[in-house]
Length: 118
Image (cartoon, rainbow, N blue to C red; front, side, top):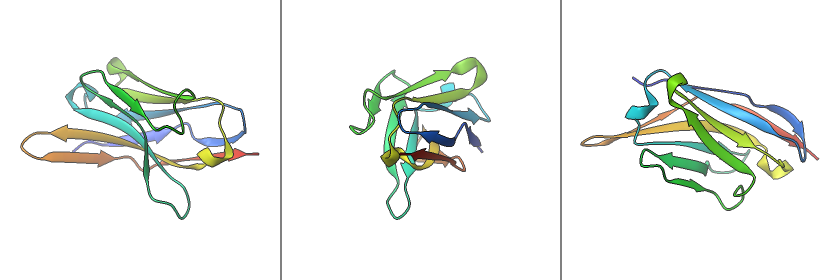
């Protein structure tokens, strides 16, 4: 069973920065993909960024150029650096890990709140 724990959320003014962390209980090398999603009040959960084991990274159009995901395999941790934050970035941010064998397993963290004030 994979456990993911997010941290680093908080309250920041528009234009500010935050770095989220996602610590995994196991080796992140075993994941086919890891990603960040977010859910704002009254809205569906949406993809923010996803990085595959093969090295491909995709970002939502709304965050491209402002957010960057990275990973530290030695610490089994993935990061989301968020710069030039906007009020519309306010949401609960979730970490996701995907393992594909004969079926696909998805694991989620508990989420961390990011609030951007104008």
